[in-house]
Structures are given as structure tokens and as C-alpha cells.
Image (cartoon, rainbow, N blue to C red; front, side):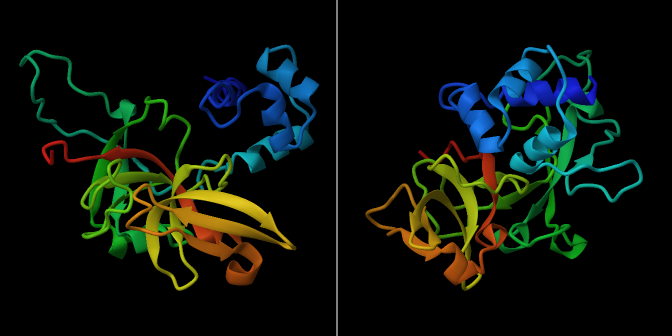
Length: 246
């Protein structure tokens, strides 16, 4: 599939009830482009201007990686005689093109800007690349919820592993589960809400178990020098949970 078709499909996947944008108009407004131009692009009637394309890519947190550039943290997988479990012996083996290997790191390492340091890599998680929550994402890392950190229960518990898209740092719409960093550097997984306050933006990091884990409130300019990337390291898009717990 070519780049234009990929982009059109990716935008379509973000529009609808309970998705990033409830309708095309809201998407166009959020990305800062003309709604009629977005409609014609999504309907396949015409392309995008260079300026509109740039705004869309910026709004999606996308980065262009040319051939020969340094790779993303997520690596392609080369299967070497994989063991197939739970299937007939003559079943078609997995296709390496269907998977990516994501580095498993600590929460602190996952929240660091830039490339993942090989010294921080604890292992690798295989991810099926065609799932809706994973498609078109490349800046992925996996991290384990720390022992004693049960603020996101019952959705997430200590020991669960989350898949974080470090390319998505926008807190809108409110309620996304994200990897956040407090001003003192402490990292955790929380839902995020924002509110304009005077000449600043208030960031509220709150847990699902709010009775036992009170929300933490910070301000973007005051506490993070206006850099959203210092407050939000990425969005949780997938999780592996221990279902034998209950």
C-alpha cells in the first residue's frame, strides 16, 4: 500500500464514536486544516497540499524516516525455526512480516526522550502489527507496572506489561491512559486530563482507584518549562495482564 493510501486509512481509523475524533470536522479543527480539504482527501477525490500534509503529520506526532536513517525502537522480526504451540504440526508457521519486536524496558527508560539505550533493554516483546491499536505505530516500547503500583486497578495491576506509543503525546481527548512523568522525574501510568488556567495549562494525572490514589496536578509552563514531552512520554495502546490473578 502506498503512503497516501496508508495515511488515508490511518485517518479513517481515528474518526468515529469512542475514537480520537468524533467526526471529520473535529479532526480538521484539531489538525488545523480546512475541513473541505480533509473531506475530499478522505473520500479519495484529491490529495493534500504540502502545508496540510505537514500539519496532519505534526498533529499525529508522525516522523518521516528515510531509507538509511536510524531505525525506530521497534525492530523487524526474523523468525528462525519458531516453535508453533497449540496448532497442528503441519500448520503454516508465523510470517515475520506480521510481527515487530518491541524493547522491554523500565518505566523510567521508556519515558526518556530519544532512542532506547541498549543497556536499558531487558528483553523483547513480539507484537502482531495488524491489530487496530498497533497499526501505523512505530515508536513503541513495552514496560512493566512496578510492584505496589495498583492505582490503575482493575484495568492494570502491578506486574502487567503495557505497550506505549511514544509518538503520541497529546492528552486530548481527556481520559487517555498515558505514561506520565512528574516534575521530580517519577514515572507512572495514569489517565490525563487538562484545563486552561490563567496563562498556563493544568495537567491532571489521575488513577482509576482514585480513593486510594489521589490525582496529581501540575502545570505545563510552571513545572515543565512548557514542554509537553517532559510531562507525557506516550500513550498506552495495549497491555498484557495476568488473567490468573482473579
